Length: 468
Length: 141
Image 1 (tube, chains in turn brown, blue):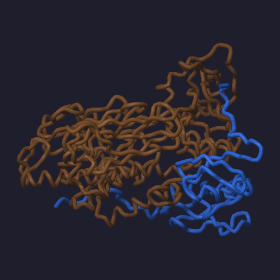
Image 2 (cartoon, helix red, strand yellow; image 1 turned 135 degrees about the vertical axis):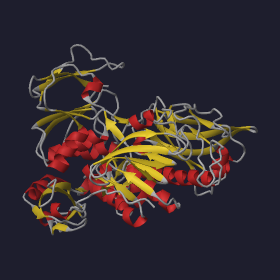
Image 3 (cartoon, chains in turn cyan, red; image 1 turned 90 degrees about the horizontal axis):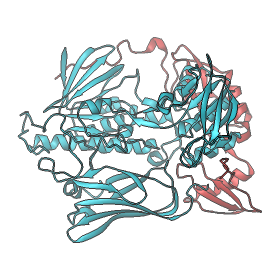
Image 4 (tube, chains in turn brown, orange; image 1 turned 180 degrees about the horizontal axis):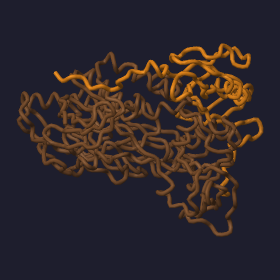
């Protein structure tokens, strides 16, 4: 089997991987290779033909393919190598990481590089994961599959559909199916609040008169060969169906839009520590995982609601990998090993799992913890001294998700330091909702007073952040 | 809660809208011509237009000959009346373009007479133009 030597391997050519590869090249990493399993770059954006992407990065409302082209179009001139139709099968950590790739053209090959960026994205939750009782007929699809059928293959999945779950892709597909002549009977959401962005409720459901039934779910799928209908029922506060509220709905198609799960089979195999809440790797301020030289960005880390944030994360990981490679070349690595000029670096035990906050080799980690009304914060830990030394235009970017909706919310990042607690960042959000990620930046100089731990809190005046 | 979502209600002259121009999704309170609640000035224009002559960008696909898969994503370059979106999509059902197509290429000059062109939102090479060896790995060195 052939082995190819590179400086950085990026696994995945979607928005996260493309931004990461471009940022790494801009930061001077010589040999950057993107491994992509599809026949072209862009990832899932290619089937997201609706507009609304790029509002923050480009101040435009681009379609998915247009957004993808903004990044993919820069790849050749940036000198990034792309290996398409190729699947990364395994990441083996070591002094030099190895990525085993099966490619349509290349066959089975190994790429060896000191730095690897994991950018595999996420996968949709399927019917099997939701445990919906009933028959096993044809006509039950995930929203992303329907999106591919309609937008790429030009196929119509059915004539009358119900949508289970009010995630953004389900809302987008409710509109898309309606426009393609499929009757969308309604959207059923088990939670008392919608799963998708408010604007998608408005422009995808309200615009087309499609009802959204909250606190309601499918309790049975009727078959037996093709979907013939579903039973829906209201649920109580514990999400248990309320007897007597069942109703039959005729349909031949069930579209599931009930959540996304970070895809981390490769990360797990590489021994990267995963966060049980985000289901993605534990990462630091430069999006490095607990295995030195292995980075992660985009929906691998946690599921983002906006692609702009995915691209921003890719840039952080790409620069982070460049910083790591420079440290390594200078003989300063997390492992504190030799590492000068081609000398192998001992990057800790392969597959070693470090917990946030523990002293990892010579590095002191500052844990980042979710406080009041915060489900999770990413990154989960930072090297505060390193982050404090960066220029002011490279703040530490935090993303958090709230547990409960609220209005007039104060988002505060508080640092513990020898001199007492310090407010690292504060912002007021008019409304916070679980589906909408909150982004907070912490300036490097605010970390200067020796911050040893960080907590994120969201204190709302209360009420229902959902009352659109 | 009865499980059905209530429409953001119209009370007297005051109307509540959610701005759809960006992911912030601002809640707008409209008592024409006054609009409050937007984080940026675009919300005001959006709200007044939404209550008088709402418009939308149309996105869909058209059929392509000479490429695989054979659908090309397209968009209106600008907005058309909201009530015309369905008609617009149906009108585009009849359109067939021939690959190769370039991003931004005009597919229809004027959709339904609103003076708004429809353009391709991606490059689509003709199948025969596809590189024979996609993703060949460069030689080391």
